[in-house]
Length: 201
Image 1 (tube, rainbow, N blue to C red):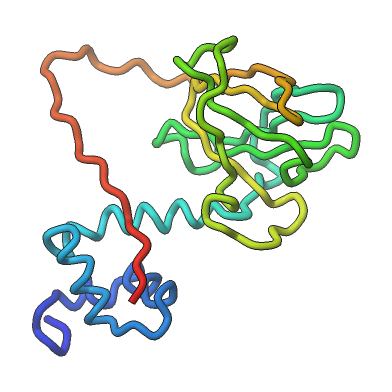
Image 2: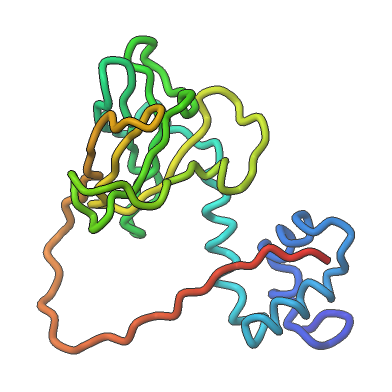
């Protein structure tokens, strides 16, 4: 079964991720959005996975761990720590985390003058590289409610926390323990990295 124009399969044309794109691009016609992404990725079928993954990441905006979810504190100084939690990112080898006020015992948004950087060469004592921005800052969320700002980072990443241009702490994001994998026998092809563009119609 196809949509009215007969161009795209009905299950793709009216999929959840197409509905999300409709909300993100208010006023745009569904046909125009479908045409854009089909052109961008070669087909609407090929666009399904990267766009879906993009909106799954957006779903972590404002998320904090539930009461029964395991968390881990990485101390920054006497006042603050980074609170990591498993989230739903184990299969992606990522961690979600937020700043945590050790005195008030609660999550807080990024304290004033604090920044986080990924260290060069992924070494603990290396110079700071790119700044790691929160999901909310990356997606330009205005007026994030207190305690709901969160970050996302790869396991094993060496980061440094800075305040007012001075290094406060060096930290390494832990690597989860996983069952042993079968021995490697044949080289595997690398996948293609894709980005979901911001579209203005």
